[in-house]
Length: 301
Image (cartoon, rainbow, N blue to C red; front, side, top):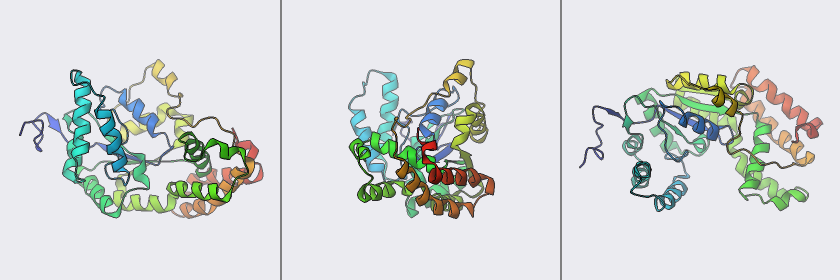
């Protein structure tokens, strides 16, 4: 067994992530990955979502297998990517294999940014994550987003991915399409999933808000850096680029009736989550829900 493949890191190496960002999707995780990747003290992978502890891991492996065929063995950067891909493809779901994926030189920060962890981790895999949290004392980063605005972003994204095709937006909103959307929007049931992660991570859970990225992105990054142990450095050019969307939702006008229906459907979820967190977190969410039901045109971009 070569030193590179040895399960025991050398004196100059460490294994395991320094943090895990669990999403949920459509809360700025692609943006965070891109910005952190630009920091010299960070060492990330060419693919953001490894989804190791996620029910979607087989889809991730399929995507990586396709990318593996495109890599050039003569390129040193490609060789690094190849080694990461192969570790994921060979993994058997164990904690030991997971830790090896994040093998790196000491002094480099690396994290697992897999937003589907928020709602797609089994009870068995949640116990594995709980063990890693306690063993390495790492933060779990969750970014919450106003549920109504989150749902609108999801609809546009699902249209972009052709899950809900664009032609359906030119028709009256059917019960079939609505049911399909509700199935996809299960990840916005904050109360249930937040409770699971709070129980698993305890005091290691760090809560951020998507609106902070929109209003003060540099401050948001500084706060993230503090939690993961790095000093985020940003040039003037970097700061000016922070407002550029990464994997943003496409422009798509949603029908007012649909926006009102989303708000009505999500209000009980906001009520449930409000019982778990400080009131200031959900006050704005209630305002958005009321606005969406009274004058939905005000929210349509």
